Length: 528
Ligand code: TZD
Ligand code: CA
Image 1 (spheres, rainbow, N blue to C red):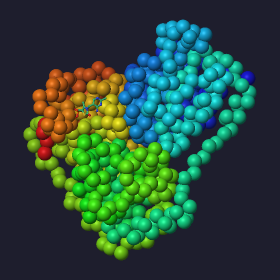
Image 2 (cartoon, rainbow, N blue to C red; image 1 turned 60 degrees about the vertical axis):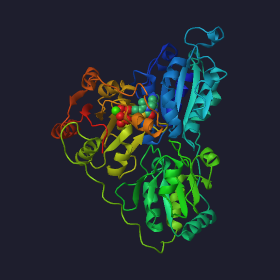
Image 3 (cartoon, rainbow, N blue to C red; image 1 turned 180 degrees about the horizontal axis):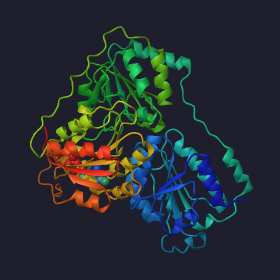
């Protein structure tokens, strides 16, 4: 009879999982001992980084990724990552080692006290098996559940003495199971929805991250072409759901109610797919919809549908529904929307360069299918205005706004997408939350190019302080950090490049070299 541990590795293989992201402790050693040669362990030096790398990997592959954390302290270190993963519907199985069952009751060192409460409310399921024999079923359930819609992180706490116990022979049936999610509309419902779109005289399409997650960007483009509708990206976007070079593409919607409704005034129907309606940020009270407008919401997430304060919702497979609508809807009897004005180009200048100039240079010099993982918070609009993102999976940002996402996620995305160049665009504030991701990139030769935009300040917070009219706030500047030394210390090629030519040379050189690299560039605050 296999042990609980043997059966667990077989279950993981069965689900195509042979990579484990983690940071180990004593409670996890019995699971990791005699590590199978067909698995690889990606060590992160902090649990937030382990979770972030796994999040990037899960989003880019579209498959559940396994993260192994150490008890309560390790889970706590990863909580910011749970927030991002929860909001991006990232399929993650997070396991945490628990103390041995014989001692849990007396709370020895490294007990995960009330373990299942700890990650709530940022997981779909949180569980500690009642018996060792229940571990394989829990692993199987967690793997299926994380990957079923709406996807998301699940959490298992596993006492370390469970791994060596014999598995229940009946658990072998778990190896044979498949679970399939359906989620298309029937033809009648599709026709009804299509008719509603056809009746609209001025529809607008708003797309969110789950369109990109479903790799349905092409279906969305086909639908936009049939409907002759402009396409906006839902606010606070963590992914890019539509080619930014498509003539229907507009831009990122503002993250305030009044501003969003004002911008879409004149439209009588909003079709929103793959996003919550809406992930606002600043409080900007006003109407939820433009006057006279209706809203139809297509989402994979029942909770997103239920909590929306306006419109009608359809819960199902975003990709299948968009594809069916694109097939069903007749060609609209109006002219296609004019393409937006070509993105402006920033003038070359003296150091410090504007952030816009740095972005233009990256756009010019990076491969056309490069992937951008962003945590440069004051330049988000500038990126959406000018970057060329055409293929699915071209852009990632922390979905809960929790910093410490992008440096690790860039490593995970690059591991998942070895044939595309990953570029991490990171602010000099954000770069400090999960900087040890650099070490994992160096150790595994993951050739991300990290670009640190050094404007010396928490730029987005300075902007927000202005919005809130909050004067005299302390703690908004971050002077005196040498990212070149830090990156070199972790084993990367690292260089400071403050002029136009120095940046262009360093950036092109780093891409050509195919090794993990960091470029620090001084940028002007305020840009524009
Ligand atoms: N801590 C965490 C974990 N997440 C956060 N979002 C913040 C703090 C607050 N915060 C923001 O929302 S943006 C920001 C902070 C501190 C400034 C980031 O500065 P940066 O980028 O240098 O990375 P910019 O371009 O200068 O804004
Ligand atoms: Ca900054």
